[in-house]
Length: 291
Image (cartoon, rainbow, N blue to C red; front, top):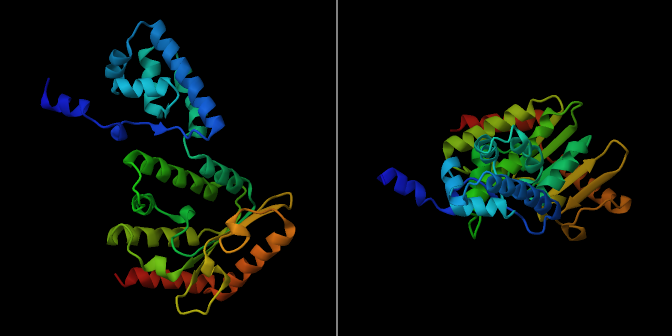
């Protein structure tokens, strides 16, 4: 065996393509178990041992068993390669349409669904740049800084989930989206100077979209209702809404009209205290010019 082949076989599970299944995600567990069962039945019908199949498709035997046992979410390339090896005529590849719906964590999927339906989205972030605005490199640096650390595979899964939510900017008709960001996170060079500059450029790019308003809350401003943390407010076509604020109602999402009025009051006060949109964009441009 060559040195290169030996290194390939010594890959850790975290290096192997695939995602862990959330045991609390009933729908996700059911989908992945069904896909895994189909893969196993087709492989056995073809008379191919798991070890041999893994070698053919470029995966470890353990990964093959995990995917077939519904304990690991296969990536698209695994399904496509399996379809090819097992001569499935596109049937295995087609399961990607179901798999891709459950590959992201349940909470992120639920948030993404709400954002995809909303006609108005308002977000205030106290300590970070909002996930809807993050570049891949910035998101990777933020998620990778967690303690205890996530596995490399989990980091990539969470980054992909965060970026998938940004499809909201391409919706037609476009929702009205408003952000208020604190000055301090804008100055923090997360990921290094180059990543930081790219992130500021991304903010300017999104801030210029006709349906997006971006405001900056200066550090030297007076106290405001967002000091307790994040606030998010989503409004839907039927007139209903959902909101949450870290500082009230234990930070839980609410649809109660009385509680929503409090969240709206907090968010409206924050918007009033932040720099106007034009001044906010100029502020970000000034930060870029300081480097």
